[in-house]
Length: 143
Image 1 (cartoon, rainbow, N blue to C red):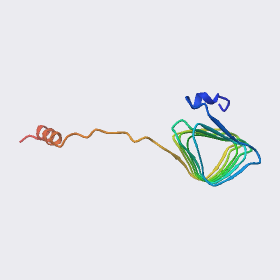
Image 2: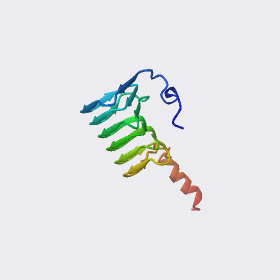
Image 3: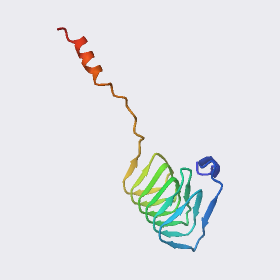
Image 4: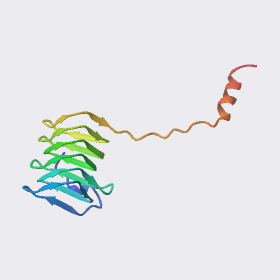
């Protein structure tokens, strides 16, 4: 479940950045590729690219919103999570805020204190042209 290789989640993304334990980043953080957090971020986390992966380890902490396509949390997040594609919550995940996701995988023990909102892609419907409804009504009602 949580032990898949990173390449399974983000094909084409070979760059991984690490924020080590004891490191504190104050301010918004933008990244591309993969970012692994063992430290602390006080600000928004924003991904550039549709294949970006953000992992918050059991030691990691985020105080701010997260806007990343693929998010894996096993630490603490105080803020809203906007996972454009997939959100994985491991057993030690502690979320205080709303989560928005397309696909969710949540392990026993994970906690979310906020609203959970599933994102559904809008389905494009083809409407009939204006001439078609009148023609159907004329056929259905005798004159």
